[in-house]
Length: 145
Image 1 (tube, rainbow, N blue to C red):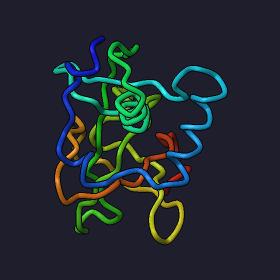
Image 2: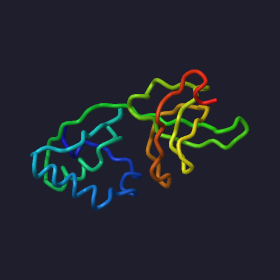
Image 3: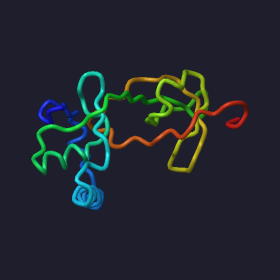
Image 4: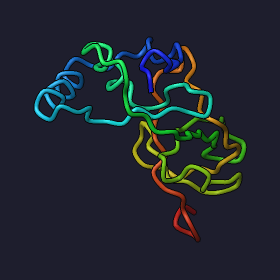
């Protein structure tokens, strides 16, 4: 795909990758002649993963890059039934695997916790939200109770 045809959500420009991460990806490109991570686009042609690869492709003047179509979702979930809703990003292996009412293990500031899913939505990076923490796995049975 032409690099110039890839659409970028403004939120990606607000949370630039760190220097060390870019250097690691740059070194991989130097050593292997290929981008280390895939560029993943949603159904509308917007980048949803692989921003560092996109930036390096621009830096190196690449015109045509390999892309993969994908889908990203977030969950709105709560710790207690009357509690505040928080948002976590689902890893690719959980996309389309989580439903309202499911219990999901997630990363929190206090460690790994279980939450109850109130909503599952398409992930659209938005300004001012920063990076989202990641859900870990869908829980079955009484593991999260």
